Image 1 (cartoon, one colour):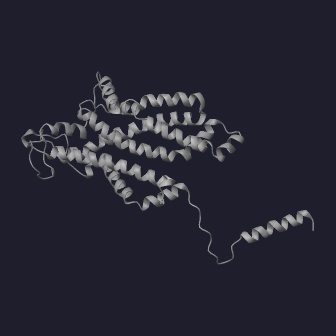
Image 2 (spheres, rainbow, N blue to C red):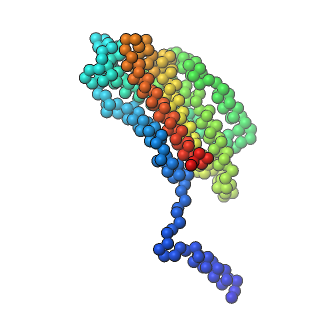
Image 3 (cartoon, rainbow, N blue to C red):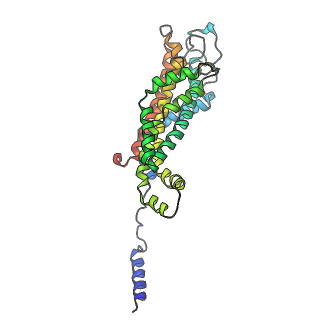
Amino acid sequence: MSDLEMAATTELGTHAADTPPAGATPPPKTRSLAADAWYDLRRNWIFWVAAALVVLVILMAVVPGLFSGADPTACNTRRQFAGPSGGAILGYDFQGCDVFSRTVHGARASVLVGLFAVLLTGVIGLVFGMLAGYFGGWLDALLSRVVDVVLGIPLLLAAIVLSKRLAADRQGSGIATVVIVLGILGWTTAARVMRSSVLTARSQDYVAAARMLGAGPLRIMWRHILPNALAPFIVVLTITLGTFIATEATLSFLNIGLRPPAISWGIDIATAGKHVREAAMPLIAPSLFLTLTVLAFIMLGDAIRDAFDPKLRR
């Protein structure tokens, strides 16, 4: 028997041995990281509670009419601090406005500021993290020092200073100003996480194979590294979204964030705090909704992080 016939016989025998007999149970399919993460998330009650709260807040921001049909700007001082009546299930505030309606409509400004600020943060953090992690060397050292400098600046203190400066000669609700301030100051953590993920993915075999096949740096980063480094980056942005919503409320409370005619939880908390002895509900309602919203996004980010981290998987 020739060598060619012996190789063919061996190959055919190997395939026959690998073929399962009829009626046998096929071996279980291997799951991807995303499939494993989703399997863990489905069994995590914290994820479902956080996701339900996030969906509720988003619905309030997009379609507030589902929760309250009253006009939040229809105020009448004759109803000042009046108790619950009709559609005003939480009563009225200092200006005679429906507390529940203003609380529901206040979700829109907070969610908009958080989403746009996170988008700006994501773009900056993605660019810095990808460039520093992939190219390394002097570029990594330079960008890392820039991140360290920005990270050393207290977020709230810098936001107060920048908000006052940017809003000094501007009119309007102030949403754009708060978004720019939070985006400029809050991208450092996302950039560091992206850099770490890129460093890990850069040393994998598929990146080396793509480089040997002639793929350029942009194609490698976009097609091979980014999809495998995106999960922890998204988790950080989810947690950052809750932080940005709380920071926006703080700036609005200090009268340097959003301004009327915008309806904000921070504005309502600042106004109600001056009259808390006359009526507590105008202060309790926006404070409670703000707390639940921030807690929901942070809990959601923590649950997703635990699901994607193999070291924490049970």
